Structure formats: structure tokens, C-alpha cells
Image (cartoon, rainbow, N blue to C red; front, side, top):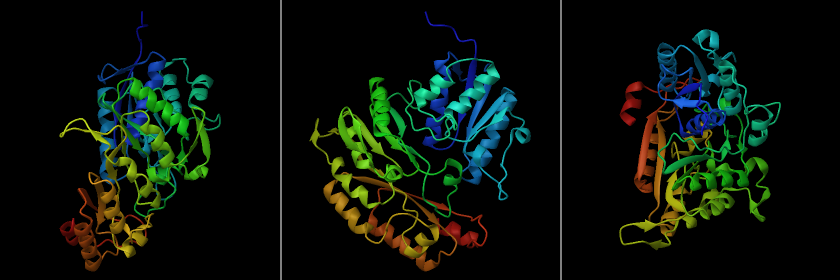
Length: 386
């Protein structure tokens, strides 16, 4: 007979899919110590708000959610990217004292956050050395650079799909992005750990694995793509090596957050359709012919100002080659218009690129710079371009 929980915790998870995985990891640790996850904030012992700090609107939503959690419950722990965001002078943007909450932690700290929750509940469980060993966490840095797999029995997604985070952080220095300052440098998980987690998800009924990270194409770069052994066979710790192993699970594998690195050319052939169940439903037990590739712009001068990775000069030729290899390929991208220094000629260049690229899905956002020395363009012009 299952032991009845005497404690319960509510969650609010905001922002991206990477943050959602962080929330799932925290929840699974708590569940392993018989703490119930509840949707009733008034009945919960406390509420955890996993925040986003990427853009101003996300910060406002996070602060509003914290306020709402305090109103409905009173006991709140704040985690996530907003917890790691800094003021210009380097001081924390938010503190427990400022918000009137119990604790504030940053992102990618599932074990530490769970420890703080359990301390508030006066629960002694497996968040010490046993959990640290399971998650392969260094003693001096509990959870902040975790690369190990979670059991992930509790998911916040529908039961047929799940996100798997293959790395944390980013080594790029895009001038419009603050993610590296909040989530740190690139730290790739081991292939064996990712495969182990994916296998557990599939055994629990998951039919589609969505691969996520801050920079999916850079997977393994921090370890110089070293070779490791999976089920006794050598596997190179690269995106290609990883997806070839994931293909063996015979479920859909979808890749998100891909920059136009050259190594992506070797991934496209894996997306080629192999067979049909019928004339209507394709059978793709492997890599789904879909790429989420944020170009952000197409003019070399603007891309240089943005400090974007990947070469854009030959991308139209590569897109054509990709579609020749995989005619069913769907490409989604995002673009920033009104970036400081963007002229009408730069914008027209972008429009021509969109015409030539024939992307399947394209989203545009405007940018109001916050860095010193970046002069915004006219807000009306920015709005018209968007």
C-alpha cells in the first residue's frame, strides 16, 4: 500500500521548454520523497514559481505570478532564470527580502531547489548524498551544472511526448541575448545518460522525444566530441552520434534550437522518409523532418553586430540541398527586425532572403536595446517592419 503524503507542493512553470524540464526534475525529486504535487495552491504547503527573465514581458509575467502565488498561498520559493538575473552593477535583480518570499534560486538547480523546499517542509529524504550520486553532481556545486538523467516519471507535457535536455548553457555571445549570463557556459550531458533517460520515457509510453538545449548543434563541443561507450559500442559525443543512437528507440525524434552550423548537413539525410504505412500516414521511426533554426537576420552586417554563430553566406544553397535530400523537410525560424543599425537596405535584404528561402514558418520580433551605446531605431519604423 502506497504511503499517503503528508506534504504537498504547487508549481507555476513559466518560460521555455528548458525551464519546464527543470520544473519536472524538481517535482520528480520531491515525489521520490513522498511529497505530493498539487494543482491547488491554497491547499499546498508552499508554491514554487519557476520564472523566466529573458525579455521584459517575461519578467512582468514572472513577478505577477509570484504575487498571485503569495496571495493564494503565502509561502513561495522562486527559482529559474529571473533568480539569476543581475542589475547593471552586478547585484541580484530580485532577492527574497525584496519579494517577500522564502528563497530565490537560479536555473538548472533541481537538487538544490528541492533541498530548500524540503527544508521548509522539515522533510528529511534523499536530497543528500544519495540523490547527488544519482544525478552525478559535484559536492561543491549541488545541481548548478547537472548533466545527469532524471527518472522523469512525472511530466508536465501530454503523455505522448516529452522534452529531453541534452546540454545546459551556451558559449555564444549574441549581443541581444542574456541567456549565457543566467544559465552559464555550454555543459553537454553524456550520450549514455541521455539515452537512458529517453529509454525510460519511451517505456512510460512517450511516442515523441523533443531534443532541446540552448544550442543543440553545439552538443559535445565542450568535451571536444570525445568518444564514449553506449551498450559496449563506441559513440562519438556529437549531435550526429547522439541522434543515431536515439533513432534506435523507434519513436519520433524532433530537434529544436538548431543554429546553421555545417554539422547540420549530416543530420538531414537521417530525416529522409523510409516507408509508408499508407498513402496518408508516413511512418518515421526516427528523426522528424523538422528543424527549428533561428536565423534572426540575413544581412552579414547585422549578423556581425548580433555576433551570431554560423555562416549565412551559403545558407540558401544549403537549404536547397536539404530539401533535395528530404523533400518533406519543414523549417521554422525567427527573426529580429529593428536591430540597432538596421537600415532600409538591410531590411530589404532580409525580405529578399525570406522570399528566396521559402521557409515554412517564420516569426518576427522587434528589439529595443538595453546595452550602452546601442541606439534604437524609430519605434514606428520598427513596428512597420515587424
